[in-house]
Length: 161
Image (cartoon, rainbow, N blue to C red):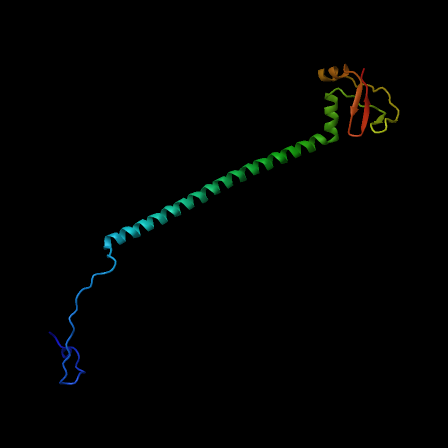
């Protein structure tokens, strides 16, 4: 047995203290080995990596869907602009005149309007004088019968020969 005097010079010279005998006590819970701890940590880290990959895949899939929708929107906007340009071009009076001639309409010197709400005729209707036919389409247009050109709130008398 060793005494404390061997380790502690501060004790007075006649006192000897003995060290108590120690013995191992069984633990209440069994201790896990180091290998089990490393396996548990690896499983937690693996689960974390899998969750991270899943979240990243969902985000990237969402960005692909968003970019596809954005490109479809750009295409639709281009189509709308194109259609608006066509409407503007077709609404020009010179283009309307060409389309009316293609349909066989003849420009009248005097116009007469019929109000659809009241049924009154404003202006003096007269027979239109056809232009000299320049093409096959104009010859077809000359053979069409007279009729009424209807608009939103008026009707115009169109006559042919």
